[in-house]
Image (cartoon, rainbow, N blue to C red; front, side, top):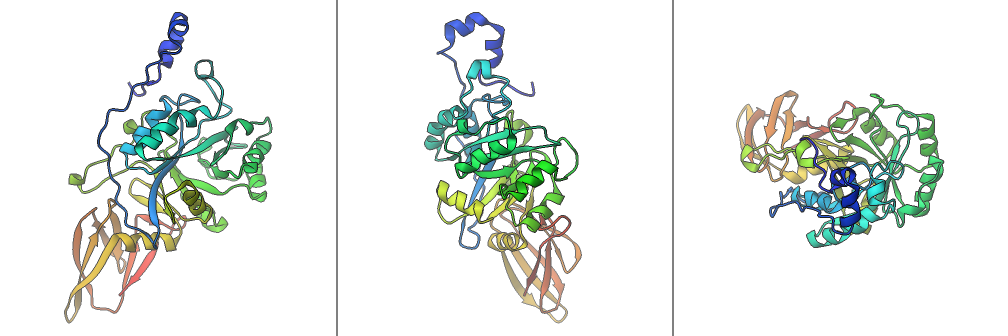
Length: 364
């Protein structure tokens, strides 16, 4: 079965008697895990790197799991910060879970505190994708004050609470990345603070260019509705290659919600999915240099020998002086030779700093 309703929605729908008798005795299964997959990333440019997912759903909109389950999944997967962003316009389970938009956060918060996970209060403003689009409001104070028949007013309501507005999956459902008239209006009003360049399985290279041109931070989020381990599976260290769930790497001064929000507003994010990274060239090169120790091991008349050691959980794919591909697996060292010249031109092929551009490092 592809999706399992961990909250007993299916049972409740099937029996009105059960609703009457057990409405206050709903059993919510826990995710049975005692182990956490640590995602190792050294500090970058002096900032601690937090792993986040800022787009998640529960049974309080159209998701399949209880809010505490989202917390437990995130902890197990090595994340540090998440936002539960249930829709405010689409509530298929409202008859059974009510319509208070703050409830998912309030249910999840004690569990997040228990696991040491940062939980951002958020919600999703949802309208017709090809005309208006979907927007996450993050760091809201009261999600119940956001809804309005006019989506522009709903976004303004979120802004009144100093919310961070994230433009979600700009290529989803329309199979292209175009800015509609409404979306341009929101851009012109300076009410978009970041854009998803990755949503679930989708990667939008063109949106990487949008973010660079508009100087907006890039996000990679799962937008998970079901059980995330059914969609994204992490391979262990023994395999040498690990593929984690989509995540937004946030470079913070301090490990607090204020620190996360400041980093987002300042654009210090790196989007990750399927062993690919998207951000500004500066941040991508800084990430690479933080993770990989580069050493010249010997010199000869015609060639130099090099040793590159990867101290992170991610593989890096590079091209040296434009020739071939070399993979530096997680927690591994590779050796290679190159023509004896003053500098090496290292192109990092699994990083994107524009729609069709990879960052280039000139290494001595």
